[in-house]
Image (cartoon, rainbow, N blue to C red; front, side, top):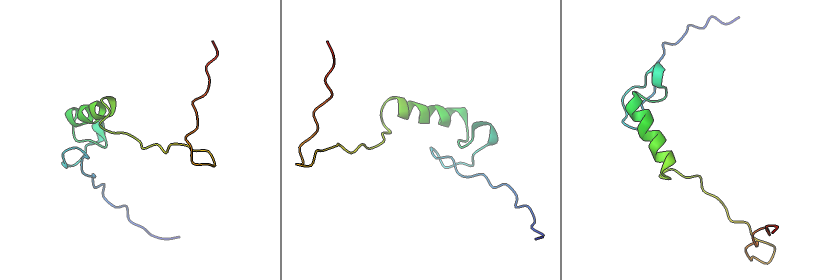
Length: 68
């Protein structure tokens, strides 16, 4: 068995302002920074890139037909 000592918890910096994060709002340092991040997601400031699909000829796929 290894005799490892527990490392003290070192909070990571808040992704919004860089201050140390606190447990209650982890990974943020405050409710304000958590709300700033949420607002960025809701307004589209953050976006996950999407790759457009193409067929074998390199033409974009047509959108699926909607039944009427």
